[in-house]
Amino acid sequence: MEGDDTAAPAIRTANLTKEYGQFVSVADLSVEIDPGETVGLFGPNGAGKTTILRMLAGLTRPSDGSVFVHGTEFEPHDQHLRSRIGVVTHDSMLYDGLTARENLRFHARLHGVDDIEDRTEEVLDTVGLTRRASRRPGAFSHGLRKRLSLARALLHDPDVLLLDEPYTGLDQRAGADLAAALDDLEDKTVVLTTHGLEQGLYHCSRALVLDAGRLEADFATRSLSSDEFEARYRRTIGLDPEEVAISE
Amino acid sequence: MTGFLSAVYNVVRKDLLVEARTKQVTTTATVFALLVVLAFAFSFVKTFADPRLVGRGALWIAFVFAGTLGATKTVGMEADNAAIDGLLLAPIDRSAIYVGKVLSTAVFVVVVDLVTLAASIVFLGYAPAPDIVLPLVGVLVVAAVGFSAVGVIVSTLTHQSALDELVLPVLLVPLVVPILLAGVELSDALASGRPTGTWLRLLGAYSGVVFLAGIATFDYVVEG
Image (cartoon, rainbow over all chains, first blue to last red; front, side, top):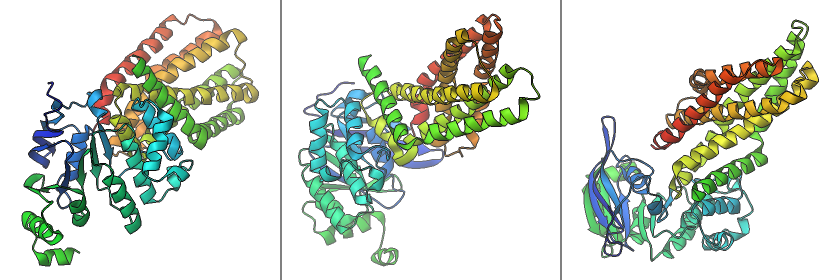
């Protein structure tokens, strides 16, 4: 089904559902995300955030419902739409037997990037890994691997970026480096999942709060302070302050 | 078609480059193959008058081991760091990934078999006539492709369903029995000058069918 690429939302889901046997991981999700918007998926463990991201990326087949990217229904076989999406997950998707540069060149070839050499150096520079490009990612710290994953996701200049817990396992400095790299992605539509409310609020202009696979709230975040956002998030998922204090 | 072949080439090239660096498959499988030949040399050479029989046995036992290990490692390489997701996200035909994995596994199997063949000649006195060496290698190549076609699918299934690697041979070996039977019979027929037509057709047809079945099902097997 073809759509109008310019007027359509960057991402639209229609009754998106994922079931694993009796367990419903995502239930009936219908949202629209505009081009250039940065949207955060928030929710406790098991809320369905990662499953949603994997379905948006075409890595997991929905049990029901559809995903539309720029107005076109996204089928797993759609090679063209895959080239418009970049994904960073918990796993680096890199080969420890290849150097950082070789990994990026391999992915650049698969994505049909025109000037592989230059583009590889460009994204290495973007994530600050030029000096370490000849080392294998197996020898990298978690933060460096995350940055290399981001470089891999940016190689083919996608206009939609899906980031699954990009800050997990990063120390303060690595987190700041990653935040700076993400700040440079203004023109892209970004969907990110995070447990870090502060980081989510910093990057996102809109929050989708999920609980047990259901969308419980969808609101703009730009005008909210950190405390207001946290209070609203807690209310949405039914956590009172004492429970939060215990879990922390 | 160019895009498909280019994707296949890139996957094979990457697998061979990683193997050249790590030498995980070739080293392990070659050492095992040499051990098989040595064990055969000590155990059977005096028992069996015909070294062709012993050499052929060593060759096909090494083939099964190299094929199983090759499929496990080439698929396992994609499971590490969820590298397979990186391939699935690329704008390429997903069956190109399968074809690439089959070909790289087949290359590992053939390399190990050539080492086994050389070792069988040295240690077992198994000396195939010069005019059958090329057809024998041809049989090994077709059998390696057929074995790898099944091996990559079954190994992907075991990885996706978190089954233990030990389950792999249990699932794999029954599915490759026609390939092994045809391979053993063809190497015997080539050496003794018997007609090869029936076994050749079985090997070619079965390898072709499992390869096409793998192309058709890989997308569903690999997707969560």
